[in-house]
Image (cartoon, rainbow, N blue to C red; front, side):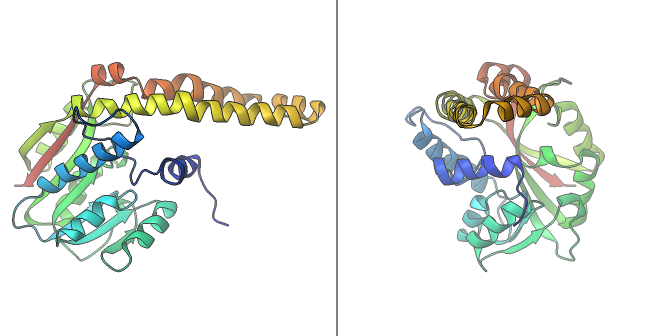
Length: 274
């Protein structure tokens, strides 16, 4: 059986239990209820915005960091020739099942993707932040046709902070684009319209996910022989402390919409290779 990581179980919870088709933020309108059903509507609106930002005349698209393949599927439906790319074996199984033979697929990190194929557009939907920053744009130039575009939708730190520390800062993103001769075609700041995603996430986490984890913990403590339970608590105390810090400190911080807006901007950026 293939080993699964914690992130895989989170993905399974979101897709199998909550019923989400993707994990990205939503683009909210006032008429969307602040619920999981509203989140699904907001995620659909988010995907439609990205589709609208594909430059006219484009034919071939690389969906770099394709997630569950939801956006790839929409791009295919619009008539584009699409290659979906992910480095995650668990996601790969989901994507290939979803897409069948309607799109090309590659299991690879973007920075290591080796192909003779060139693309008109590279789309990165909340994936750019996970790539090696110094390699992202040189690799994009290698994969793009002359005059090709990038559509990057992600959140960016306003300054160097520990908050979302893997995310690009505005300063570095601007520097890397200019360094690699990409010019900005358009920018949509959608920060305010993404914030309800965090509010719904926080409500789901605090009212459903965390109580479920605590219930399983308490059930285990009840059925497990006391001496084994004490031994496990002692033997795993370092891991349990880390888990407690994640569950009760770090994860709630990630859902803090006010803090998010203070430190981060969410933008959809269209770049053109000069």
